[in-house]
Image (cartoon, rainbow, N blue to C red; front, side, top):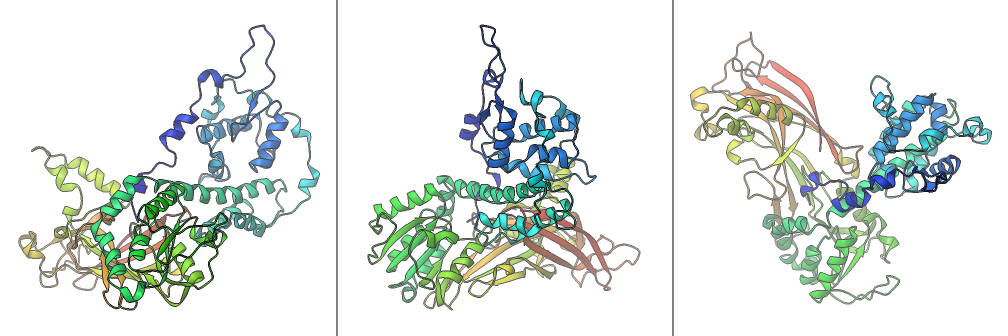
Length: 590
């Protein structure tokens, strides 16, 4: 299901255009032509609301945005100029952003040296022209003690409960743990003994985290409203043919079955299921636009079931019901009995298999609605790795650009590539090592925790490498990094007539997932044991002592940034004589 979402901006151009303000409107402190002063007009820090007093403005921020400006000023000991910087910092962060609270998390984070993120003289300059709030932000509230609020205690668990209010916690454990750590940094003892006004700050952390999840989900599902993305996926014959064959060529599995399709998009898998003879197909799609499109497509093809106004379905044989919701909220939208689904199907896979974190929704649906022994398609997934050579980098391109040597650019590009993963197609001729299975997942039995793992593989040079490269001349091959891909299986456990494998391997036809490339900071020299040399005076992995094996220890975990994954890579070269050389760990975020 991976697409060009990595390049998707969290805000559309249309939204950006709507948010642009005329400079004349921003200068709302102008005088009336008759010389009378306009009534006070204070713009909210976090939305477009305006108020006739700072007291009303800050009460609004506190009640509607859970942001206590005066409490933060007191708790952090900000003076007049520090408070002014805070206001201008907030203005700069939320400018043009309709969902201003998405930026509030910045206010409770500090630089490594403990410096507040807004403690910069640049924020002494008013961000907004004639910002009346800068002249009146202290108001009379500084004299209020708010004893009632100060007497109230709040624990770390209370903050966690705030997170739970937003729901959709099936895949939030990593983020919640991150918030716990942030909370401990703010309140080391985990209790309210520092200053009771920290209550608003802590509640802001919880609410911002929940809203951040909501924002990511909205942007994620909203991006799938682009027809270009769906055309790319539907045009991927390897992907679509694999699902079609698994569904249509296993009649004993689908005939008269109740099918649940998670993340249906255009509804293509639901259409296949109905075509295969399913008695009921429930197509779940969180994107409002695509749910509407899938409904129309099912209707246009005579496969849409009629629904009552309250969501009660008339279960007409072989027809599709499209439900606009997330999988975790499905039973809030329609009546569906627990463990009543015969087949669960979903194209949930992302780059590096686990990017997008949609698998957790599939597992949630499996545990709640799939019958004991019911089928899940696909039912297995395996991540593979291999080492790639110079051809898998951009170095060859920059070495000869219209006859000119621009390799200085290539070196810098490769250095940058060692800091971030690259999703691209790797030619099989550029793979220099044997492939190895890094992680196997059984979707019928795995738990969500299995999505976070650490695994170790050892990579050796291909035995026939001399036939396709210049290894025979130099007897040394340079490995520039590792490439990851995945295979998903529709195995004979459920697809008894026709098992199917969907592979994104560089040795197979290209898919829209491509491969995921992780580049070493510096290439590692390798040789086969037959050609290995060992110079004890030089490090393993150098030309004087090539490694015969590269041991790669890789960890993939769900990131605190919702729907992202963190990858760490530890690399060790093993010489012919058993000596080892390890390189510093590399960290990536996808």
